[in-house]
Length: 105
Image (cartoon, rainbow, N blue to C red; front, top):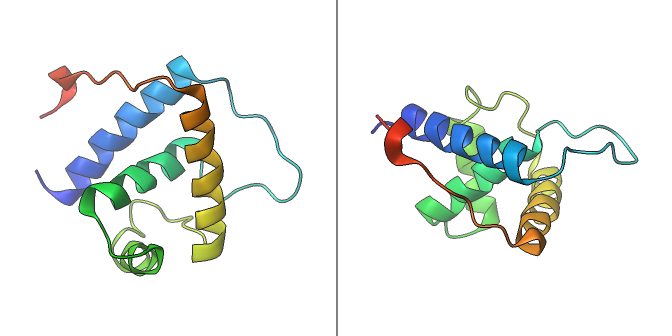
């Protein structure tokens, strides 16, 4: 499976999970985030899947190779804040992601 297909499949699974199992996103104070909750969680899972050496290594890879899939990718510090917020939110909810392999190519 190529990278684009993998990211698209992962995003669809994460987005389905977020829409069916989590509460809708609520506006937060401050500027609007450049990535949706589903996009942040997708990138976080991808970063864990590939096992980058550091957050910096992942950010460098994402900016060089994932811009087409995520054109609104923020700088590293903003992405890390979003990632910590949404991943801790999902962890607190403690709802496992139910994956259906029927949609995988």
